[in-house]
Length: 533
Image 1 (cartoon, rainbow, N blue to C red):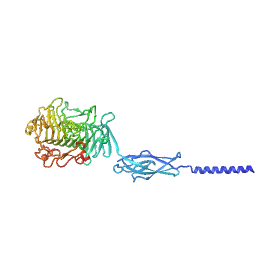
Image 2 (image 1 turned 30 degrees about the vertical axis):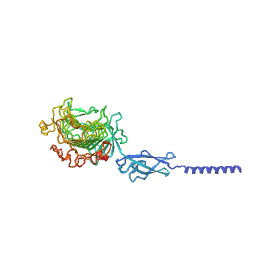
Image 3 (image 1 turned 180 degrees about the vertical axis):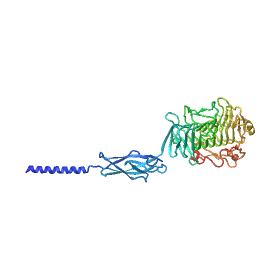
Image 4 (image 1 turned 90 degrees about the vertical axis):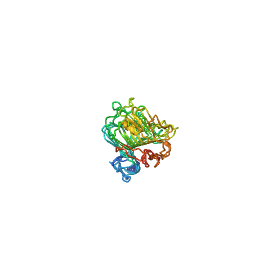
């Protein structure tokens, strides 16, 4: 009897244990405990179905299969494909909304669930630029365009830059040389900005990160097929090897620069070769350059090595050397040009010459024909800048300069030296008798005012008016305050105005200098952006 009782007891215990195991097996499944997303950022302006990242789940149970669902799809901006891939469902704009919140639910094989919120960040689309461009390309204003090295647009290719685009640049390419954009001969650039959407070349550094506002990247270089005076008709920009400029086509077309701003450049692109803001080597008259600005460049603003390109509505602010530099037989036109030398680092507003290989009469002779120009010097005889003349005309230069306003020179207003056989005069009939390009004409109606060392040096045949044009405000220079170069209405700038050449390109004005009562810098210049106008 005892044995039978023990056996029954054992059977009952075994049955209870078996039932317990069955119950334990039924309760062993665990719900997911977390969700991971491989990437929570996406570039703006990408097409729908652009992948953001992939979801995965955390679960204590091994070998589980998971199903993912969007409980909140971020106002319809996101969806899932292939169960766990998060993709965009619309074109996202960082400026409209930089972050989106979504809610994701994961279910396991037993329909146990877990939910989690994610923040998806919309980033700028970073396009790194370096090397050779060999076919037509467009740089979008919607992208973060970053020069990481020297970039060459090769012959036959056209680079188009959309209005409003900003091209940032690193300080160097990793080898100590500054990135620069070079448009080679027979290539073109179409940078056709607008007053409300200028195109800007600048450093990637913020103002707080810059140790000096100058010299934080390279610059913009355009090379063409127009004539230059160098022996053989061809030359090379210092620091750029194997990429020539110069030719025999005066009307060569390298494209369009309109409402283009080049800021904070001038860093070395070759051994000890600081580059200009905008370098124009052998660029022809078929090229359009208007409403362009160079600000805070370590070297020159605009430098024109030969060629025939024309400049209209261009300004240079606070560069470390010369604002407008002309040499190698440059023969182009200019109107409505403005230079603010500044008191800290600048040299001259004009440095113009023609001599090649020691020949003061080398051909073609440099002969700019420029009217309606305002040149502002450092404003102080004790300024630290080495600007001994506001304008230096030298070394066989020809040219025609009318409707000029030159003010606030640290020393001399205009110096002329080292002439060749060109006739140097302020008498127009005498200049005409000498014939183009063998005269250097400085209009007697030009204004030179408030230059500490006087109006002229080494220029006995030049005359000018010593009258105050009453420019509105030149306070502050680099350090602050308003800078408004417009002359007083009805004042000296509106008297004895020269007629400009009647050739269809120049605009006849009723005023001297670069400005009437309207200010063409408004809305797009560095001065406008900083509230300095």
